[in-house]
Image (cartoon, rainbow over all chains, first blue to last red; front, side):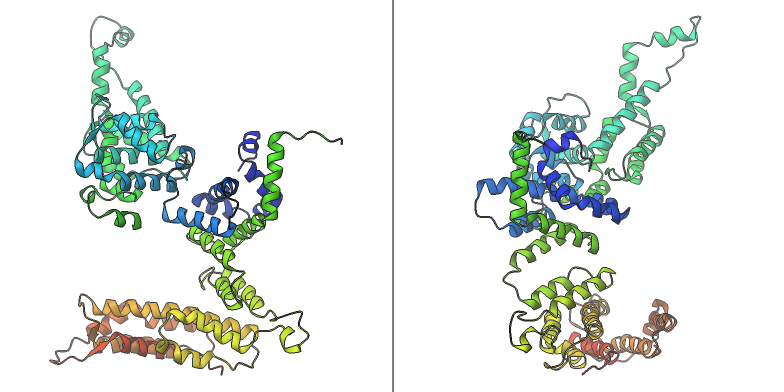
Length: 298
Length: 262
């Protein structure tokens, strides 16, 4: 946890506690295993947030039992109810938070699925803002790109399609961004068709028409090449960044010789194995089973 | 260094710092993190929730509950359980009233009555008929003082026993298989029970790692499978055994190996 000028200004509570308690000294002694175990579970982040919440809460309520407040906070993190009505920065902060938020969206709005209504991007955004008031429109728009295959983006979408695509876009955000970059590079590097003629080779390359570009965009790239590039991309991501397992990505890519980026993402959003890996939503067939009580207790 | 006018941020920081110190939150969080690092639980959030729950009720709780909470921090197979045993023993041995003039009240040490109560708390989830024989062996008289070695042995035995009871329950449901009833073929149960007995009997008294491995070898899956398969006799009236009897017999095998301390 680097103590930069920004950190000091934004999180005074954290700085106070850790400097004052000299916990850093203890951490230094305990060696290498500490960063792994606490980083894997993001313990420090939750402790920081617990203290910040406590300090905010005590300003509004004079009577507060600190032990009980902290116990309730950690219990709500354990149960998964802690992301409701929190700011976007917190919701997005850890994989566990993201997964719990996705689950809350499902449990709160699943009735839309049973009514079969189709909604627009703006309407889905409003719904998400009910649970997280500063949720960015950008994320919802990117989700729409997945559902609608980057086409006719003012189309209406079903709740089920939206939710599974949202899961991929939001839970695997860093992975999706890295893959998009890799895909764009691959697209640029695709060899042009060299037409044998009296013109020189460089001239042929320069005369690639608009239509050829669009055709290439629609066809996508070679699946095997894309998989190799994705493997390399995954290797560069931090060990704590969540990504779908390569085995499932490979099983989707091997279905077609050529694939577009959004085509792949749509396929991943419909893949039940990846859904089970994330563990927030039920399988596609069981989407409408169970009452609300079941969902919250699961 | 002259008196600088503090910026609003610094003043606020100081206010927060003073508040957290005054309300002991700082020290509590520090203790919690240290316990977390020491015990390395699989679910840190649940661990922290239980820890702070215990803190908030600790003024009202008595010695037994505090000691029990310390022992529950980690599983008995973990290294940190040994440390927790020491801390628990010290907590249990605290004199009832250190300021009292009466000699019996201010003498530190773990009394038999406190010890018996603690054992009962640990075994509270196990039905009484099942743990009665165990308590007979490791209990002690109220007037006796309990040294640390005895304390460590008995507490560990209790926790292993609790796990053993759970294991026996799941073995029985496996033996029941697809039958929904709570009874199963008596012969199969007897084979399982006698395999366990043979394994424990073959343990030499010295408890060397070699003899433990040899005993465990007796319980290997293929040997158990072959004994169960060789039982396929065609008796028309197969006697059955229910869960209570099975549990009782398994527990008898377990307790026969426990040293009698009383």
